[in-house]
Length: 112
Image (cartoon, rainbow, N blue to C red; front, side, top):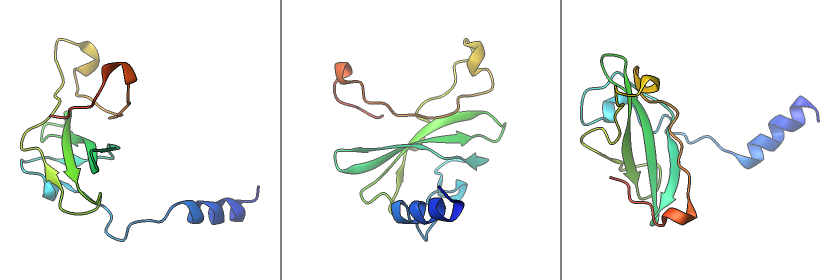
C-alpha cells in the first residue's frame, strides 16, 4: 500500500481533536512536572483515564481522571491513585505505561 493511501486511510479512521492536548500539568490539582499519554476506557458511560504523571522529582505515578464526554470537564483525583512501591526494584524510579485491561473473572472495574 502506498504511503499516500495509508495516510488517507488513517484520516478516515481518526480525526485529531482540536483541543489537544486534552490534559496538561496545569489541569492537575497538585504540583506535577509532566503529564503523559494515558490508558483509556469507558466505564459506566464516562471516559476514564489512567494517566502517567511525573512528580517534581522525576518519579512517575498514575492518577485517575474522568469525563462525561471524554474531552471536557475532567475530574482529576486530588491525590495519586497508584504510586510506586520502593520495595520492588522495577518500581524504583516510578511506574510507567498505564494500561487498562478487562479481566472477566474479576468482575466490575472499581477505580479509586
